[in-house]
Image (cartoon, rainbow, N blue to C red; front, top):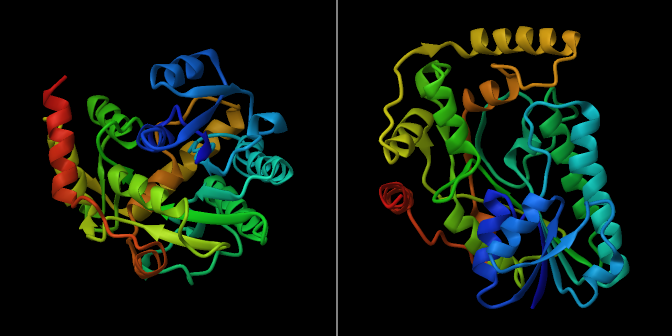
Amino acid sequence: MRIFITGASGFVGGAIARQLKKDHTIKALSRSVESDAKLKAQGLESVRGSLGSIPKESLKDIDVIIHCAAFVGPWGTRKDFWEGNVDGTSQLLEVAKQAGVKRFIHMGTEAALFFGQDMVQIDETYPYPRSSPYLYSETKAEAERRVVAANSSGFETIVLRPRLVWGPGDTSVLPELKKMVSQGRFMWINHGKAKTSVTCITNLVHATELALTKGNPGSIYFITDDEDQTIRGFLTDMLGTQGIALPSASVPSFVASFLAYIVEGIWRILGIRKEPPMMRFPVDIMGRECTIRIDRAKKELGYKPLVTVAQGLESMRKEATSR
């Protein structure tokens, strides 16, 4: 197959590209000189542009697009989030259809459903909220809606929804946690007692491979490791692979959320572009339960996790000790 990937210089897109290039021809979107260098170092053909300016000719003969690029924030303006997550996705869908691409796989998120509530053993029938106080959730939900709505007999769309992606090569969650610990900013929310599903990158890549040819067009699929954890247990184990011990200090979720709300308000009033030290979205989503059922992915994609949480953690430990 000929596959076009957005976000291939990031953690998720990069892992998918490295695996798929073993058996497929890969093109990847590049939005900067730095991204060009990263992609070329991986042996990938890069296409310079942005989500809104990809030449139709670049997608000629492409069979599948895997759309991993997103504005993840969690800090930014409404314009930043809408342009990065909604407008960019819509424009990519349109040029993909014009170019005759057969299948469009969109990397979604459980956060599309989040407005501050616990989500317990949910599946794909769980509804989108009428509104959300988080721009990331709001815009990722709208992007998912547009991807599903674009499905047609000649243009198949699939949405994959991982939860808390982690694993070897993490350039997202792990570095942020390390920074928080080193700066003395890390505190548990409600002692880290909330239960959560998680998704090892190895398993997400496997699910993406399956979605190249399987799955019902126009469908959404949750992807997890199928092993629920507590936030405290999982983060303690994950940081432990790096030789980092997490502090025991904890704060109630309502206190943390209120403080984050105040800090965000001050930052917006002052027009500060730099990310504030506390933000509502990460505080709230890490303080709430989020456990997910993956029956649909098992049945329709034939998905089964390739690695257990313990195996994924061991891979991270080996990666850390080999540096």
